[in-house]
Length: 421
Image (cartoon, rainbow, N blue to C red):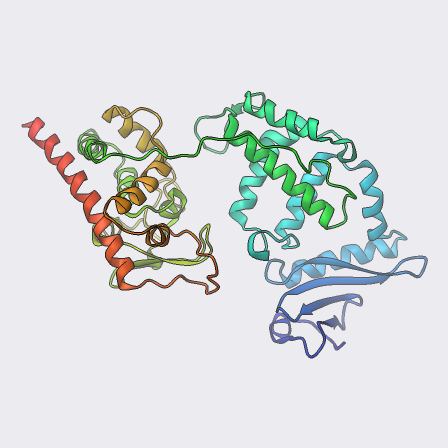
């Protein structure tokens, strides 16, 4: 167990020898250290003796998620509690007796941000997933169950929460510039219950609670989104785009919608795309983080034309840059809704519909389900490398699908021009 002044460079170089784990202790802050596992995982820890002389060890957070300075500050705070006669580990035990759902949710968010809670593939939960969790916590879970003691939760209580969300009991206007209202429904109700169950599961795993009180609660069935645009509807969207452009519709919004149709990318992926990720010569976009982790995603020439033609706004790195902030344009959904109103397509067409349309057109062209999954960026089972390889066959599939959709859009736009004459 070496003792040195811990620095980031030293942590980077720290490796486990023959044991299953090894420790590195700081020479300046006694009790503060790093634990390394043979898997390569490294965690900041603090070790101390209670007033009764019992040795305790507490995980502070994962190296890489928590910075060295943040970990030192946390260690000083814990050791300060010990110096004042408190035992941080005992505090956790006492908390179990009076823990409310709101307090448990706050604990979960704090632990997850520190990298102490593992999600899919045994990796720290992504920031984007935490943002969604926090939204459901603040919008639905806390208002309905926040004041209840966790130990008194039952399956009936959490299923009633789900019913209340479905029926719109937590409906309210969205804040921070987001449009519309949080109106409830079976989908958000089911996801809210899923979030609560996951939080309770993590709390039990970490020893915060003794039992999982909502284990076995049944989630509402939701209708799987299967809406796709037909060839005629794609032409109608192309016609609406031509009309909207003449009427002064936001050109960035139109460009994002067109890109979604021509690539099958998720809305968040297209809107957040940065110029440095786009490789025109290789016909791919190197996304550093997606729902399926880091990926190379093929992009056809028709979509590349749209992407590469977008104007640069100052130092904004995004392809579809916002004219109001230094971030990306985020109103593609609103633009699509206006186009659908103009085209008479109803309100059931969403950005996900465009993604499903791309995959369905690829299927119509005869490409296999496995190829379509790769085109859409679905994580392949058994893939361990950081990036999914793009071969020429996949490029060809993307190119052909994109060209087919682009042709239909162009036919729709041409019909709009004829009507204008």
